[in-house]
Length: 152
Image (tube, rainbow, N blue to C red):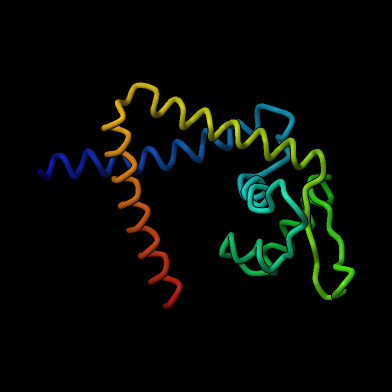
């Protein structure tokens, strides 16, 4: 059992690191090489739909408005994000993706879709169910740990 724990630990650590490195490398090898992983995740949180206010995006990313403002300033400067004031309440800042931002969003989405398709391509439906269940357990663990850390 101890060997199994060690193997599982190695696999999880390697998996987390590999995903981040491959994701970062995929950005560097194309026309979105001016984006950081953090910035692409901000683009992902903004999404393709209507304008969003800064508060809701910051909440989704679990970051402060100040941290988001820095990222948005960079993304506006690079041409990925539009920033406007709400007509109803000028205090509210609305953000949305430019065409370039939407293109980056779709590129990142394709990366994730390819990762999922490749991951499940050789699994049976039963194995997929086990994988999803295991990943839900892992996600639950990390969410619980993260919430406890935020309280400290």
